[in-house]
Length: 263
Ligand code: ACO
Ligand code: ZN
Image (cartoon, rainbow, N blue to C red; front, side, top):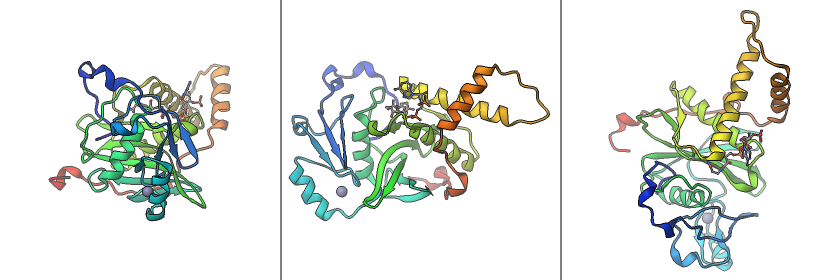
């Protein structure tokens, strides 16, 4: 299953579109899913679905989870930590090497993504999971998935900020990170379409801020005519936008997947 690729929704069974999970406990958060997600059917009757916040495995009961926690020694997502600044880290996870984690991530993500269909093959994707660190570990905040090879220059397949963290600038941080990866790869990139309503709002906000930031940073050679409210609005928004990616903290070597034969 992947967090990605668009498909024709007209074949979907109407039942599969209905929200089926009431509540998910993930670490210190309780999440209320927005949409259907293909968790095993016997779990959908539970009032609360318990997930290990580090490996994202699901259990039938709190007791199941507690038993799991005594055995699970993950305190961060699997894969390589390719970015760290302050308490924010990014882990790169290969959908082929860490299949179980990737599938569990997609199941969780589908609860908040409606316009994408999940396929059961995570092999063609990389997952970039953003975490926030505290003394208990690296807690998942959001992620985006990305095709290892995209014929259409997509640099994001699916993107998600978990609801308890939304509207705090993490979405724009994920977007900024996706473009930093593209810069290192020396490629242009764009998110897979269609975007959700929230995806569209976030990308518009990201791009208008980014373009204004560049235009206003140009000195001398250009004369810009920007209305005062645009400038003031931009300055106010940028004061609020404290979370930024620092390219110096990114340790990432892109792989040429086309040369690897099979992923
Ligand atoms: N109402 C109005 N504007 C919003 C809202 C909202 N609920 N959410 C985001 N925005 C706009 C705002 O302009 C906001 O900037 P501001 O807060 O400075 O005004 C901007 O988008 C981005 O806000 P962030 O806090 O940086 O983004 P957030 O962490 O909330 O994440 C995201 C945005 C990832 C789209 C989140 O809403 C989400 O996970 N939604 C569910 C999944 C989804 O729809 N993903 C995108 C699918 S498209 C694709 O995958 C390619
Ligand atoms: Zn676990």
